[in-house]
Structures are given as structure tokens and as C-alpha cells.
Length: 89
Image 1 (cartoon, rainbow, N blue to C red):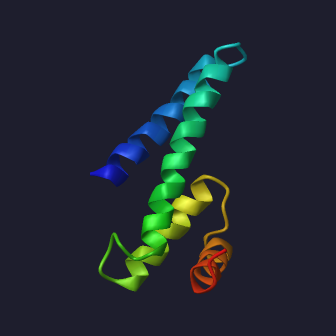
Image 2: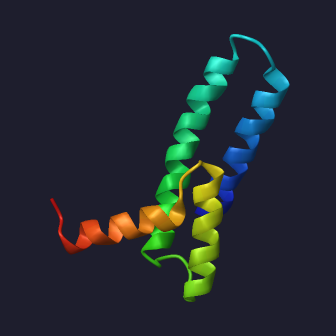
Image 3: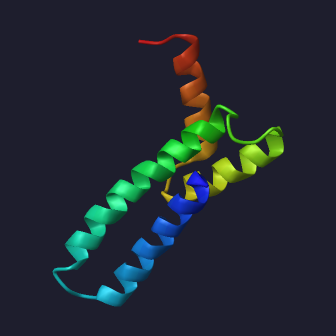
């Protein structure tokens, strides 16, 4: 349910961006998308911890899609985050 809601908000933000065009309203859309990008990153975080899907392949594919949608290298992030959990702080 959460993934569907975040994906819908993500699509809505980009549709609004396209419809607003060259306007000051683009700033409002950018603020909205900033919040949505944060939510996509949280979904990618949960997927990287394999808390969403039972199978590793489904987690990896969905994590890569989520990461790519916000310009984040999922493989790089997962490696860095795993090392963080091995040696926090």
C-alpha cells in the first residue's frame, strides 16, 4: 500500500511539473517532489533491509528502480549502508 501511494505521489509530482511549465509554481512542485523523493528513499531503505519482499531478487529489482527514480545508485548505497551497520558511528 505504501509503495503504491508513494509511486502515485511521485507520478503526480512529475505530471504537475510538466503541466505547470515555466512558472513560479514550479517552486511549489519542487518542494512537493522533495518530500516525495524523501519517501522514495525511505522505501528504498526498507527494501535494502529486505523488509518488503521475501525474495532477494524482488528486493534488489525494486530497490534499483526506487534508487534510479531519485538519482541514487542503489548498489553503491546498499554497500555503504551495510558497512555503516557493521560499524555504526
